[in-house]
Every structure is written in C-alpha cells, then in structure tokens.
Image 1 (cartoon, rainbow, N blue to C red):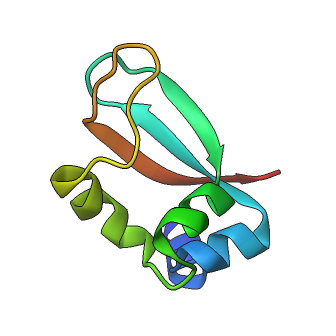
Image 2: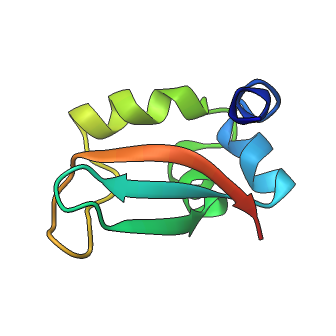
Length: 81
C-alpha cells in the first residue's frame, strides 16, 4: 500500500489535495508528528516532489523536532484527515 501511495501521491500538491498528512519521525529521539501537507505546499509549492523532502531537509532543514530540536527526520505519507 505504501508504494501505491508514493506512485499516486508523488507531489506535495497531490498529498494536500487528497487530505493526507505528512508524518515526521525524529531519527534522534523517535518523537513523531503528523503535519498538514498544505504547510509544505505553502513553503515549497504544489509541484515539489515528495521524494525530494529528504534531500531538502539535509541541505536546508524544513522542520525540527519539537522534543529535542533535532533536524534528522524521516518523512512518510500519513493517513487522510
């Protein structure tokens, strides 16, 4: 199922339009959160590819963990709201 989501929801705009969240898990402390995909669309644009989030986070962090302030995170398409 996860692969199906990645192929049909390939851009941030696709994810936001479908009502799915973007789940973020901290690689340092394992804290997790689900964010509205529209927040990412507002920052990066609707055509930004979901699989580009990891590279973008590495070079210029978009999010930080609210628990430990770490920027090493894992992105995943979440459930629809």
